[in-house]
Image (tube, rainbow, N blue to C red):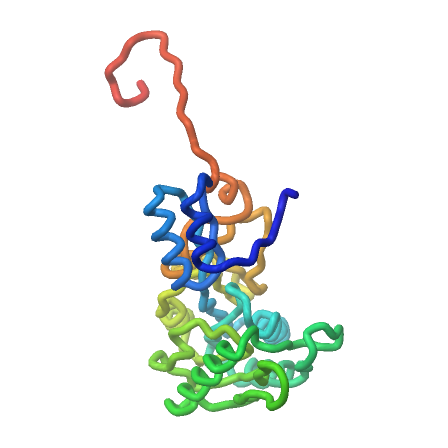
Length: 286
């Protein structure tokens, strides 16, 4: 067929990279991506790396609160927060913070956790026990360093790797939750003075995949988008993949692009062919 899914080990992946293929694309963790990139480089093969993210979700003072809060729930808790472009760090203008946080907590508290195969479930389990332990450790670190739990904050007892939908405030840059990729249903909120502080804190990460800005001022959003260190910026919506536009990140979120003509060009060898009427030694076009 045109598409097949193969399940294998690291050794199998290395064999594939070493084999007679022209290029490699990888989606996964930053650590694994670095190894794939290294192996590809050893074989002098082009590669695209779509890796981790810690996407900022910036709510400015003039944002529509209802829309932003709804977006926050979808952006953070879809697929139990386990998406490279999930909204993972929330920066909210001080003048709107109280109302936004109250509505965000209210909406998130209505999410139903349960069987991922049930149509009634909003939030399923974390993908592994190891992932669950990591989420618990990140939240405990934040609590010990002064974060306040507004919703959730602990594992759910019973079968499966379930964690409560969780919202924290008073999040500081020295906390793990502010620096690591939080791959689970946990939303850390930091109240900011203005958009400049929001951008500074949004960029204070090793990742650079996506970002979202919530505001009525589209001209301001355009200017901010140019200052945010990410491969994707979405205004008044969460980050989504769309085959019409390029998808990918910078920094430790990888390099290269998927989707759109730019994604196609990642796997094209561009050849220059030029016809001359006269012999020339000039290295420029007259």
